Image (cartoon, rainbow, N blue to C red; front, top):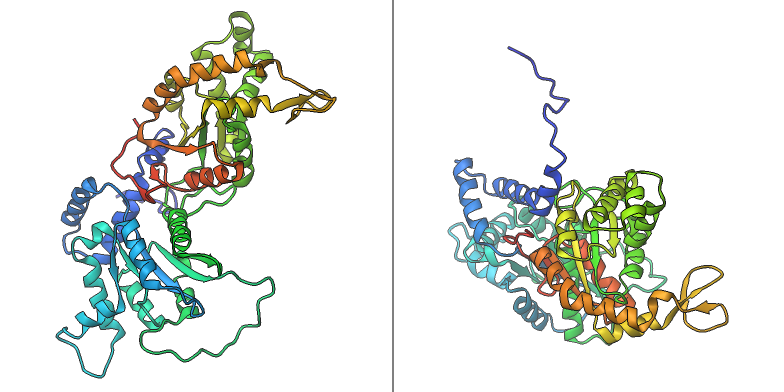
Length: 455
């Protein structure tokens, strides 16, 4: 009988499998399935996984399991906030009163005695009763102690995000008080629960002038950011369990700000910024086969694809990820890019109207000393030859009449669309939210599309 070295993997995953698993979120499916097995501990694991997969096919979004922790100093109406969040997220509410009503009807109920273990069991029954598992839940006043929280965690009642609503911390916060203030049965141990749920914690800072609508918006933004977690700069491991890097394509008309947004995004996440015009000019000047073909025959769809492919296979892009602007420009370009061994896993459209694009392009010029793009005006600023109105009108007409429809059809449901008419900073925040989210994610509804395919 041959021996196997358990310290070495006998098989190596082919390179082309990684983008497929990333694109269709197979790693996320494996992680959810393992968590479901650990929580339920079924007798027949194979049968349980078959049932889980059969249910997974018909679920069109990831389930939000939200827990609210409210700082005692806040005095706004938590019930009104919970009602609005339930309406927006489409989930059910689990309150301490609901748990206690079921708890008092349990066979093992003892009057005058509250068992955290039994309360956790009752809460788990509420969380697993149809249709709660498929719609998600919201808890805002339960659990109240660290002991209750630990029991819930052991029973598998785990939130996907824990929102901590608190006042904005002052620049110099007061010294902490080690003494715990007195609480009744329905008041939460704020600091203790923050520590217990630190793995899914997301702070939401509330200002004095914030109304209910503003607070709800902040909470939804926090749920959106935590739905799939955040990936820090130069980290190559997604929290969903899939090894990979951000490979972002920003699509939009000339004047939508795609290059400026791409540079800012690359700086924020530690990605490699790629401008198609720059890498094409670099390839044209090289003394190789592609450079010779470009100089002799000009450009073509296949040549552009080869130029991009050669750049994306360099070490810096493979190790850090990349953000590409200015390519693809048509459906054929997109199909060739998708067939690459490392295709994009984030596709973002920047939508801007013709008037806004023209105004932005005509408002800028080129400093003839530095070559940088600067606001038009001044003795050293000249108009770029490609920024005259005739060229701009032709480019914008070609994009909106032909290219945009082809690109949308090729991208399918895997693309995210953002209004680029808004201020630069606001657009950048939305781009970062779309990048942090899953490859297929509805940032408006704060939910992931599970059964959608990009192809």
